[in-house]
Length: 163
Image (cartoon, rainbow, N blue to C red; front, side, top):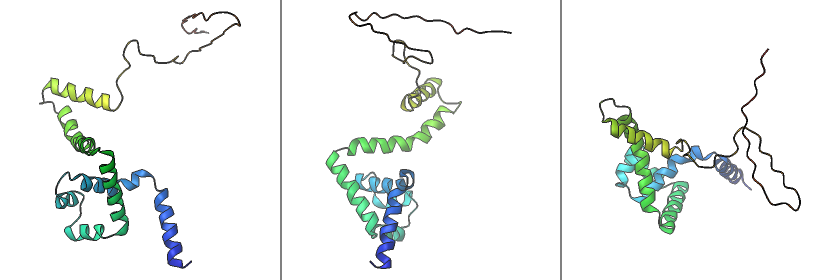
């Protein structure tokens, strides 16, 4: 193997080991291009590329492969509508936050946005009757051979010892 081949192999291994967070810029760009959310020039401009830089990026083998893979995923999964909606919702999050924190906006609208954000972030409190587990207490199940299960529930307040 030549030094160039070794370098390319090591570089591919390094890139594969990168956390997903560092790969998202080109993935998102490729996704937007594959979905056709806007004109290509607008998409590249939004991501900070000049027309020359965009052309240079498209000509790289790695980005071309990423774009082709993402385009195939979009076509195969048929998720273009849902993916477009997700991308648009993500772009609207800063606007929703601005409205939710604007004291001049309608209180009802602000409340709806805050509730929606809590729901999306999975921060809503559990509803009454939902199984929330045993909590911080002790759960003990004893079944004696030959007997039917008999649920026994006992709740005791914690004992505090003073002095």
